[in-house]
Image (cartoon, rainbow, N blue to C red; front, side):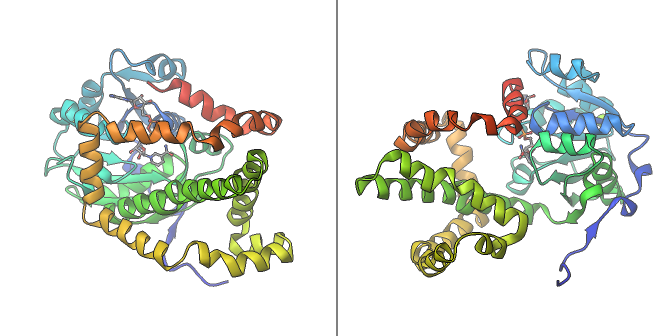
Length: 346
Ligand code: NAD
Ligand code: MG
C-alpha cells in the first residue's frame, strides 16, 4: 500500500483549548446544523442555535436541550459563528448577523461557495474558516454518539488572529471529525471539487447514465420493470462494492462475463466526448460561470430548476420505480433518519 500524499490529522493533532472556553453560534438546525450543535454541546462547548422566530426547527433544537436565539442575537453573543443554513440563504443571513461579528471572532462554513464566489464579503478583522464533515449530518451525529467520527476537511480563508487554523482543528475535534481523520484544503479546492463532483459524476452524471440506460432498454421493447432493476436498483450493489474496496473490489465481485463486458464497453459509453464535456463543466465551475448562473436562477425564482425538477420527477423510471421500491421497503431501515431530517426542515 502506498502512503497518502496528504497529511491526515487526528485527535492528538488538535488542541481543544482553542474552543473549550468559547461560545459557538450554530446558524440553522438542518442536516449539518443539528449534528454540529449537539456534538459540540456533548463535547462541553457552549452552543447557541440561531434560528428565526418563526422557524419550525426551534422546537426540535429546544427539545434537544439547546439554547435558541435569533441568528443576530446568537452571532452577537458568540465567538465562533458556524453558518449552516442552506448555501442559497447564507448571503441574506450574513446581512442579519454581520453587525454582531466582533474583531477576532470567527465566521465558519461547511462549504466554500459563498466565500469563494464573493457572495459573502466578511469584515477584515475576523477569522474565516471551514470545517466540513464529508457526510450528511445524520451520520455526523450518529457516528459521534457511537464513539466514532466522520472524516472531514479543514480550511482557512482569513487568519486575523493567528489562531484560525488551531481553532478550526479544535472545532473539528469537538464535532468528532478528528476521530476519523481530517485533511487540510482551501476554500477554492473544496468548492470547485465539490461542485464538479456533484455535477459530472455523483448527481448529474449518474442520473443521466441511469436515465439513458433505462430509456435504451425500454425503447428496444424491454419491460420498464426489468430496465429499472438493471439500470437503477442494482447500482447500489455496485456502488457499495466500490465504496468498500475500490474499483478492483467491484470487478472481483461480479462475474467474469460482467467484468469483461464492462472493461471492454465502459469507455465506449463515457468516451472522449464525455471527457471533453467534463472538462468544460470544470471550466464553468472554475471561471464562475456556473456560480453566476445559479445565483441568477435563484434571483429569478428558480424557473429552470423548477422545470427540470418536474421533468425528472415525472420520468418513466420514477413512475415504475415507486411501486417496485415498495417491494424492498423491509431493507430501508437506515433511511428513516433521513426522512425525519427532511421533515424537520423549514
Ligand atoms: P439544510 O438544508 O439541511 O438545513 C438548513 C437549515 O437552515 C434548516 O433546517 C433551517 O433550520 C435553516 N433555514 C432554512 N431556510 C432558512 C432561511 N430562509 N433563513 C434562515 N434559516 C433557514 O442545510 P445543510 O444541508 O445542513 O447545509 C448547511 C451547510 O452545510 C451548507 O453550506 C452545505 O453546503 C454544507 N454541507 C452540507 C452537507 C450535507 O450533507 N447536507 C455536507 C457537507 C457540508
Ligand atoms: Mg460576536
